[in-house]
Length: 114
Length: 114
Image 1: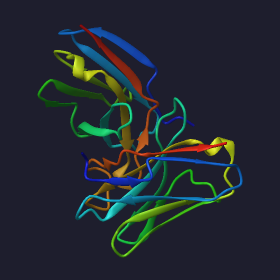
Image 2: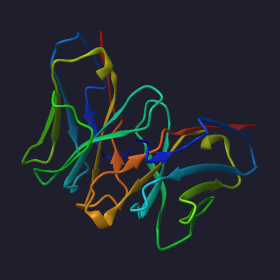
Image 3: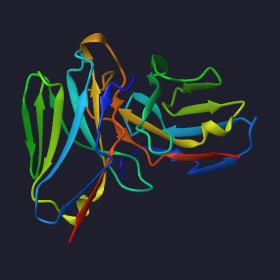
């Protein structure tokens, strides 16, 4: 158990809909990262927040947005969903503002868009 | 543009023998490298890392080798055990540029046969 929690574990929805994925980092970790893993692909970095502020952006679509709240939990919002958005979405946390220490990953949310 | 590549999607090794997983990268600015292990239905877990100032790092049965001139790293597992069966991802980051993200390879599925 990494100490990072993600809800829900599974999400099934239809094209055009909007969903929110939630992540609670390990106690004391200030950085939260979101990754997307499509079928047979590596993890693609989406976005990072550090202590409530956006710190880095990766291959995140404009239809996707995220935020980190004062209690440090984070939410990833996916809107106007398309079939291709079906993937595993992982959240990770780390204690500092650099990834050179390992990131601790949650179990992921599996999103299926029908 | 796949900056981190794991060219072997799968590897099968006899229990007790050495497992060697390979990873190549193209971005010469990468200066920190990590290996993650992933079991089904779980998030990736950190295994071992290496800074670019080193060419070897060892932790128990796991050793990572870095060849900067070849832009190549490898993970050696000796001796291999059935519990090592998992998907292994290598990842890289470029601290010096203030990058906040890990760039992952596509993963190699390791199967240890009894």
